Length: 75
Image (cartoon, rainbow, N blue to C red; front, side, top):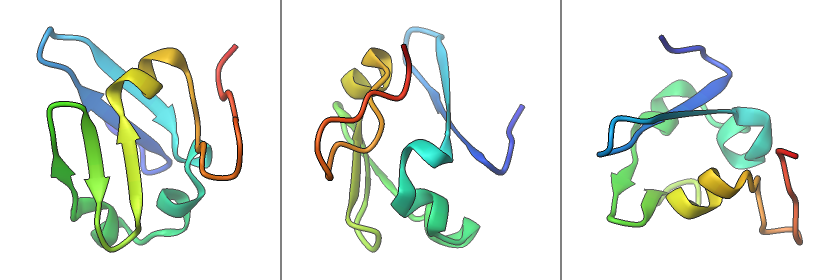
C-alpha cells in the first residue's frame, strides 16, 4: 500500500516503516518525480537534488526533519 502523502521504507528484516511526508518539509514540497530520484545506503535514503538525508535509525526512533533543530515526530 502506498499513499501520496507518505514515505514508505521496506527494511531487510521484513518490517515496513510509513511516515507522513509532513515530517520532512523538503520531501513534502517536492514533486513525485523528484521523490523518486533517491539513493539507498546501508544507513538510509538520500535525495541529492533535494539535499535530504533520512536515516533508518532516525525513522525507527520517530525523528522527523532535524535540520532546523531537534524535532520528534512520533511520541
